[in-house]
Length: 220
Image (cartoon, rainbow, N blue to C red; front, side, top):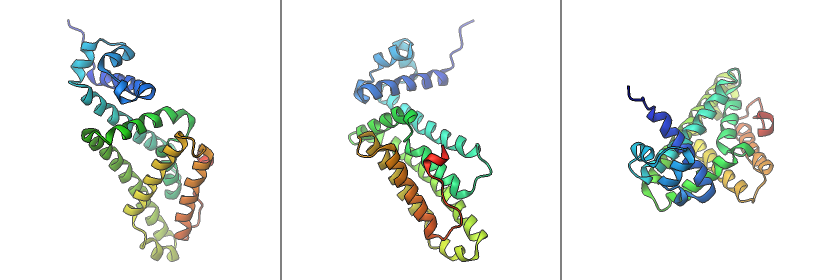
């Protein structure tokens, strides 16, 4: 009987190989032949999974974005008793990719962002990933505002003046920028953590909330 191939598992394995090569050489260095060698599969196996290098890169972008989202969800589900504001701090921590173990992932993500400036299909994929991250932050902000409005009579009126969509856009832009600044050495990870903590603290102070948002050092 012919051996059954788990194509989805193979596609993910190939995507991991793409990420390794993009980290070392950029997207232009991730040829299908080199990816096949890195993934320890045949070139034909890569070509059966992806019709072109562009299709392979687009899948790899999705793969990285989904991995970040999954890590955020795992972090949130791992502490079900946390407050809504703390959950937002944890989510921002994960998306920022400031930890040393996520540095390679951050380099790969920014390499894709740079390539997307001259590739509309890649840009479209990245927009989808950013939209998913924005929606997640927006949901957490909405939950935090609802909790504050329900838990404090004085905060209820203030909460109504904050737009979760705008705040989510600002927070996502901040964490994305912090990732870049740490990678190029403009900021240390600790300085980036402090900037993120300051932004979140000011957000809750503006709403006259009761509990502080933890720093990244406290969240890890």
